[in-house]
Length: 163
Image (cartoon, rainbow, N blue to C red; front, side, top):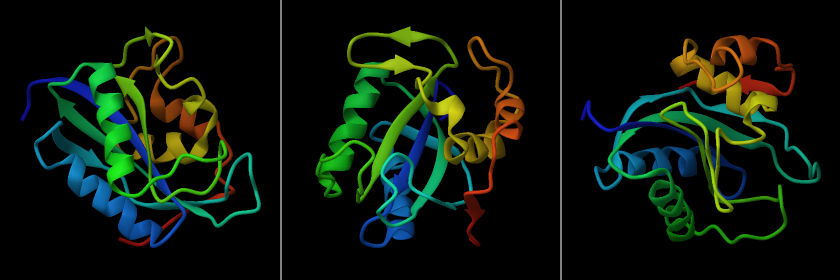
């Protein structure tokens, strides 16, 4: 599926079997319902942010080609989280799966429900490093290339996991 909008989705998990949960979410994202995954990063282990007293996270990034609008895709990601057992609790708290729409066609989009690019993505190495692995040359709205932003962040809290 070459046609369609280009969407970048960050995945994270730290409950149950986080690696299996992230891989299962990738599989479900590629089932054709929302589009197709065209690229995926390696998995990374990262220390929790904002709420340190919880297990480490497993993070990754996928690029999709989708026929959905940004809001349709974001709502579908929330439904997928729920079907995989995510219960929304404390902000930055532990989770079975987290799916964040980070960018959509590399353009700005803002409603009460969704802001793109994701407002905190550019400060988070656990988002930017996996993203730079699959799309380092992408131009960010208002902020250079993905690879440049990623290289400026500290990756001391990140560890690439073997495939």
